[in-house]
Length: 130
Image 1 (tube, rainbow, N blue to C red):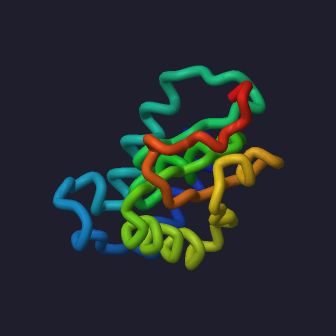
Image 2: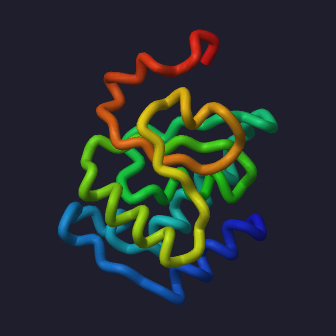
């Protein structure tokens, strides 16, 4: 497993959290299982360097956090603001750096990890070439 993924998995293991208020999916509410399942998927795909990845329906942000740990600029989009707030608090408590943005174009300015509370059917503020 990639070193950054191992670091994230270790952080999650040190500080487990219960997200049952928003999901009954056992992987979604078990951070270790979620980190491992997403990391296994990511190990099987090849994405171009410097890619910007849009994680639609990011939920608590696991996918976005892991993609960013692998070096991709990542924008996690979630319509459920309370769910995303809980995820952002969790990742912030673990020391994961991110920015919450109000528009997709604001997240495209530089590299990093971004979270956007938005219905993914309304992403009309992305750059024309994205």
